[in-house]
Image 1: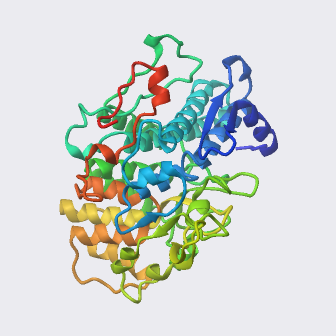
Image 2: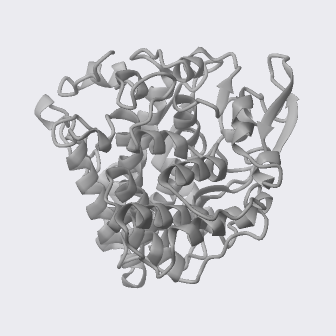
Image 3: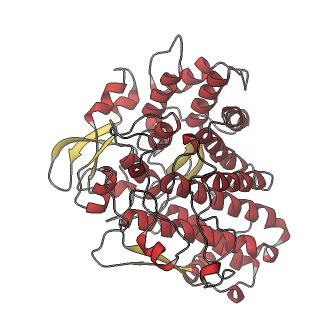
Length: 459
């Protein structure tokens, strides 16, 4: 694809405006200013696609919210919030209200991303024929990913057995300029099952359109398969999850980083990254009041507001390098001698979203649960592949809890624990996995303008 970054950035600035309010944490509302008649050329459409990627990079998505929010919700033995922002503290303590700004911005940014993806799909006929399939595939991938994270954070888990009746989130498949402003034109919440079905359909449609490699760090066929594997896993469709993970592994396009520490704080993707968010000093998920590094890095580099729970270190053998991938620092509030993960310690570095290590753990656990041998390897081999890279001892036998614990060692501080505990019906902070307080409230501001929305129970 022939990219013209400067042109696209300028066009994108006209497409989406983000207005932070002074001295108000995360009071950031995306405003889509595009009208249909402003989109006239292939370059215009690709600029909007870049805008959707920029949305994924934002604090309302993988730049912070899609990773930090589930970490705060599933904080047991993982993180402790020691910051000064009440909305984040309330997420950590599971006592949110419907005006919580974390929830408001997750919702607003996610639907802004979806709207941009929908605009690309709506205007796909304008794209040059050589690029059209890839552009459409990337837009479908982005739309699916945003819907998936929205549903996971704002609705009961698929695993509770009531997915066909539990309310999910509104499914938006057209850009906002298509919908009218009447009550009838405002979307209601679909069921969890309906949203998952749409996510799967979008990813399956994206896979044959996407390239195997993307020199611009965009989504590839294996990015889509990795997210699809994650979707199937959360549904308990273990054979399907294993098959998608196996396709990624057997592509032979990816390898584990030689050392665990080399997988993080990089300029650009590693050989392990299936999909990752690129950050630069000019384009990033936040530097002062927003972003993963702002929260997770020790002061004064960051704010040092998300510290590691001391119980987390009980999960490691002495030889496991993941148990020492930390630094001792201080919080912005002045607490000293506390541990911070090294995963997000440096500003303007790549944020891994899906990694090859996860695919090994998914394939292994799914084969264990189904008694299959997808990929022709044993569950023991898959878990030991991940453990060996970290210097952990080789297991001689394996059960499901071994995979659960291994995911916690490998994928902690990346948002995975929330999804895993809900999938296997384990309590979180003394709450049942499907407790009302373990999902975000539908933002009150959205309910005020859309009477078709129904609030989550407990709010």
